Image 1 (cartoon, helix red, strand yellow):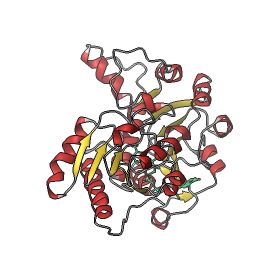
Image 2 (cartoon, helix red, strand yellow):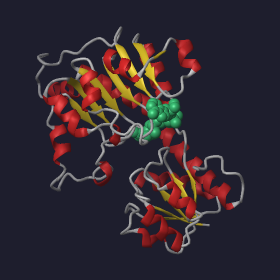
Image 3 (cartoon, protein in one colour):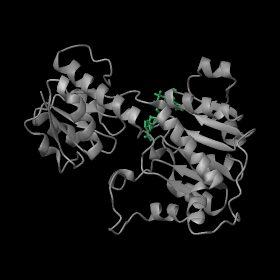
Image 4 (cartoon, helix red, strand yellow):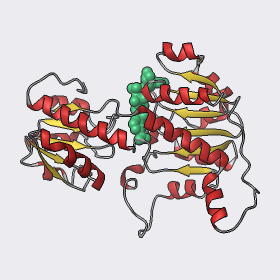
Length: 329
Ligand code: NAD
């Protein structure tokens, strides 16, 4: 079975190549993302393997179908970038990696909190330049603070456990409550109560119509002064324009994001020698209390092993006509 991999980075190829020997699959790697201008590259293959910023809209899916593609293998959990209905109509199956390492993402969310709060990134640079002053490095104790978690699935659960370990009070909002978290002392509250009472809000829900722009000018107005907002989930959960206004008014005290609503043409690429035209991202970067990482929360050795093996097993199950446990329907 012939598979073409889009948006390939050196580490994707390295992990597939080290595991491919025990699968009868032929992999071809493209650095370009999959979109309407690159979809022709899929001709002659049986499956495409794609990542978070490949754009599989209705038009791309129709072209994939014309090119004979029978399987879309997502090497990620989220599938908001795929027109599922169009794929079903075209008879193309979709598989994904539902959970690779929830701890990897949860731990990165905590890294954003600690860095923003204790300013270790600034201290590192200062000390290297012989500046040992503490001015403007003051943080706050996490112990005793209220942390609001939106979405208590696999990642939200791992994140809640860590924050409980810091001695925080954890409040959660989800359409389904989780018994294990309830037993650990997490309190499920309404969205409004979470907005009103949290010192730190961390987003761990999927991007769906109900959650798009869950952080907007109305929800921001309900929050505590100087609230810290962390988003490691999907960019469009936050209305960037509204959050910039709230940062200017000092309503938001800290913002840590690993995802950005316009990340598609920016993240995962070295653009350091180019002119970046995204004014909103540049404005965000100009705030001293904003920390942006480029969708790296998943990026640990353990997660890469899991992503690679699950993707290969997903494709193998399809090839052998076996039940596809990780099918997206
Ligand atoms: P999950 O499916 O285990 O959990 C999602 C939770 O959100 C569920 O408990 C669900 O009930 C809840 N939810 C659904 N609709 C909701 C709503 N309207 N309001 C509140 N909660 C709602 O998913 P997960 O594995 O924990 O992943 C969460 C998200 O993290 C993914 O959707 C993905 O976007 C993101 N993610 C980011 C990275 C990264 O590298 N930054 C990596 C993996 C996943």
